[in-house]
Length: 568
Image 1 (cartoon, helix red, strand yellow):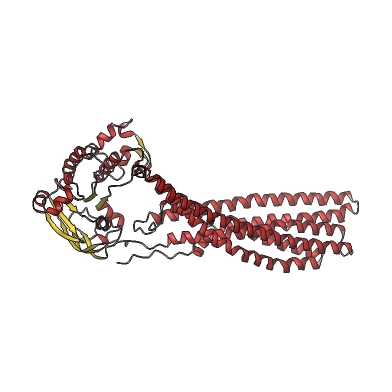
Image 2: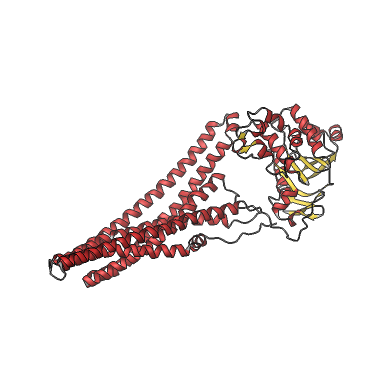
């Protein structure tokens, strides 16, 4: 069954959405920044007027009046920048938070799909670095609008002082902006590659840190380090290429700006030498030429950030627009408490071949799957992490796919043997998915998690680190099993819940599991003889179908292949 498709997203739509969400603040910021730039442009003009109207004439009253006006101009431009920056930063920070929330919502969508093929470190880069690169456009765009206003005010002022200088600004600026955009294209391409390589390096690093104990156990530290070094060097190369592109881009912008301003100063000087403009006019013209350095540099900065923002927006759009792996279910599905009868009809895909299986309500069933890939597929279908290629899973006769994914997973809980724990106390982890602490002692004892707690400094209230890395493998498994039991779902599917505990503890867990889940449907996907011994029925899958079924004792006695699999 094909996956459903999420709402279409493109880099352009992500960028537009980020800007559009705060258009009011951006408009206010742009207006205030334009006021600031207008005030800045008027400074050299007013200085020129002071020279011509007050200093040149020797009129003290005129000097005081024009200087007062200059002071008012400075007060105006500083106030505009202060409040404009506040509006722009507000849009920037909130756009960043908005993008991170959108990514989090998509990644936490019960229908899944966004995380497929992406390492956790890569997703972290998206939510931190890429989101910020898109959000910073919210601050830079008003500056770009203000830079255009600054050039316009400077051009009008120069037209008033001298027609040739004004025309030079008006006619020369558009080609200069076009060149800036042209030179910025390589930066956009290389920025996307840089972020992609950085995401890969971060993802590899996160995976290595997560599996450090396993790597040390098998002596694979050198191989792991070599893998990370290779990925890190690739990321470094991409970063250096992007940095070179940015340096070349900004250098080209500076060179173009410098040549353009030198031409303005040259023409202004010739006009003053010929007496076509006054001394104050020359001072104003030179001051305006120097002032234009700022707005023209802003064009370069805005173009660079926009190029990086477009590249990051495209990466974010890939996640937001990723197809869902399962459907959203039918809102009309009854929400009554299920009895727990589980049925698989014609399930195909991932190595399964039209698998049929009936699990009556309340049965404790063992499922033996020699092929790990087929076991993984079966568990993903039961957990509604993927839709079967054919057939369907039913709960009390209702297709599991008709339930919303989160509700389906509440009724049919699949607990993996490597389930992660969370940062917090041990007891908080156990109760994370449960209805309360009414049966806490019972489920802790059944999973032998009470013994794990007794060996910790603060017992059940001991703080454990993220992913349970402060616990041993056996302690983590027992706490995770207690958490699954505390959730008390209608159907509990456990995958090898005792692979990291000793044989004596495993036998105790098997007995406790049978007692706690008595009358509740439980499926044990395992080859552990201790767990299979407490089941009411065992089915053996081979080539995607049921090859044999019966009690554990009967299969041990009559089925040599089964006996070799579970005792070997």
